Length: 107
Image (cartoon, rainbow, N blue to C red; front, side, top):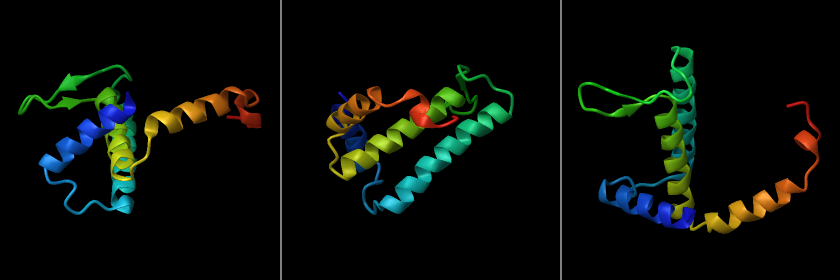
C-alpha cells in the first residue's frame, strides 16, 4: 500500500522536475521543514484538525496539510532510495509491539 503510494508520488515528482537533481540531504531537510510548518500552524492558533484553503489559489493549508506534505516527502525519499517501505514499516511495527512501555523512557 505505501509502496504503491510512494511510486505514485515519485512519478508525480518526476513529471514536475523534482527528480532531476534529487539529493538525499536536501530531501531530508525539506521533510524537516514540513514538520516546522506544521508546528507554525499550531503556534498561529490553528487546531490540529483544521484544514483550510488559501483564497488566492485554493491551496490546502493547516496542520493536516503539513502532516500530509511530510508523509509525501518521506514516501518520495523511500521511492528514490528503493526502500520497500511496506516491508520496513511492518518489521518496525512488529518490533515496537514487543518493546517495553514508552521504551523505558520518560516520553
